[in-house]
Image 1 (tube, each protein chain N blue to C red):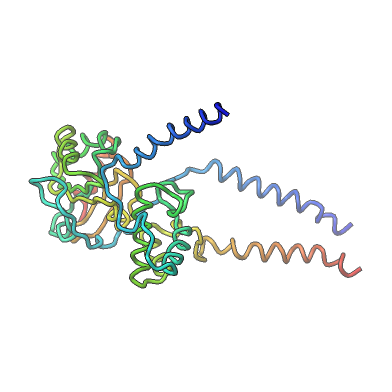
Image 2: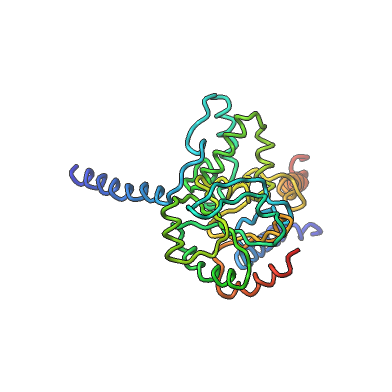
Length: 137
Length: 176
């Protein structure tokens, strides 16, 4: 029991300097970086989009998950645009215009990405063709 | 007998996948997310001064008739310190440089300029980092070459090394 609480204390001690470190750059958070929108429906819309936008600093995380300062600025951009009545697709296009298709986890169909949609259909069709004899018998 | 080739297709498919994996693992990787605004007009912005005694920066300043560099930096950013001598060399070569101090405080910016040199004509304060998103920037330091009419011509991601300086001077001289 003592050991468990000692480990918890150690974890806390290790995590606290990390939290302080995030504030050391002397910046301020953009208005909606860590503040939810008052309207729950709008906030839900913003949240769905934020899980779909890649953080450009920690690229495997969405801006909803990332603690990087730039992710905060991007979250604020999403929320303030939603609050202004912009559609999530328009906001996604805003980010794509700045960072390219890589910024969204839901890439649009393009010359590069169409095999992602077509390949499964072709593979299933090929599988059915292989298996057709088995069904007939 | 005529269908014997079908038995080989899984192996062939496996071989193709293996080749794809090997190609993916060995290809030259570029982990940077580049700005898509190259060739576009600088987005509209207006930043207050980051330090006393030096003007802030607006998009209108970047379209006033001379090509210039715009450097995103922060006093808290270690590679920016390493980059400072190169910016100094560029300024000495006659390249006008404007700065954008990212997520910073006036006193800390002033201290940074004291310690590492001040190549900037103007410095805008981007306290919350929203200008970074506006430029399609992904990190600090980052430097943009802006043409005389305010068109973004090039983006340099990361600190400017000594070997990058001649190329940047050439690009600036060639800039319309």
